[in-house]
Image (tube, rainbow, N blue to C red; front, side):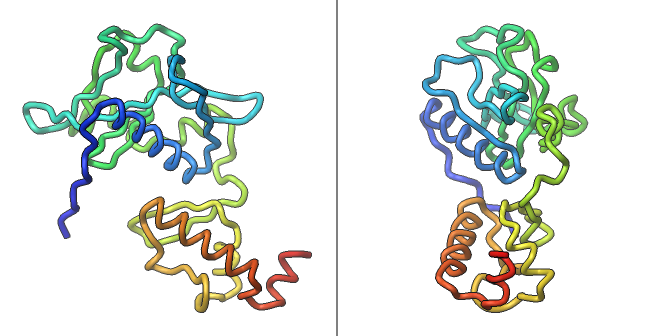
Length: 216
């Protein structure tokens, strides 16, 4: 099935703000705590980590295809000038049309105004979906507590709901709140499914023995 291209926000500032929100959601799916500073005067867009260990992230997005059609050009500067050393720790670059994130250490793009992404054999391909670099930088465990893998093999979706993992081990594969191969693959759908799951659970729509075990 041919993938439907996403709608593109024409206004650059609005598109950048949207990309930041996508980053927050995607990082959260990977179990990474994310915060945003007030205002937009800082040299970074987001902060990842917990007290004692934070890293600053500059978020960029691109829809600019290279002339040869073999990748995308992504800006790595501000007002036409490269970022100064120490402006941030990581660049999170989103190739919108490919739904691909690049998590690149700041030192790898220092002094540069733009880079090419999603290129076959390109120098930044090792950083595609390299969320583990942020996890290592803030010294988080490989598998954060309370995060379980759910959904089909293609989506590889991660969700912060330990009840979902326990449902599998308890054999509760049917009934209200069951999660199977049809679990939504997009972030909004996953959030809505979990919200329904929690509401049903709190309303007593699950076996009493399971609820007592959870409360105990």
